[in-house]
View 1 (tube, helix red, strand yellow):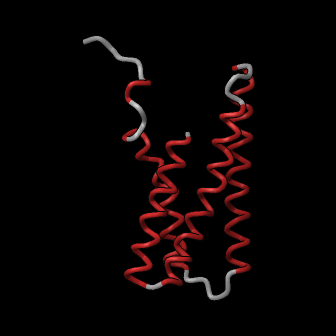
View 2: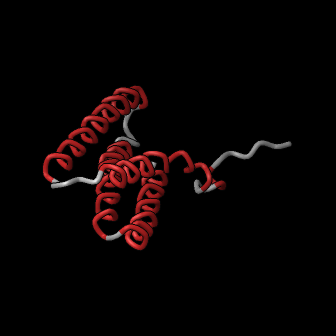
Length: 122
């Protein structure tokens, strides 16, 4: 789970300076704000799952689904706060940052430690 959050941070840390160089500082800030609206709830969700690691396995689905709902709610709340408090929000870089951060965990399987996976004899 933390690998996915790390990938989100890496994607936003790469895309932010690229946006700064190509389109200017304000667009880079909007891109980073969009990315943070996805990164913060995911990081809190990952921390909550890590805290629940040594608890009873029967309670894990409840914690997972309640945490997932809380993550979605916090993401929507952060998006609403950013839209309300940031004057003249440029939607394109904002949505690009949000989408990039949300899609980054799809590639977590590429960076997860292969030694931690069980090996299957051939």
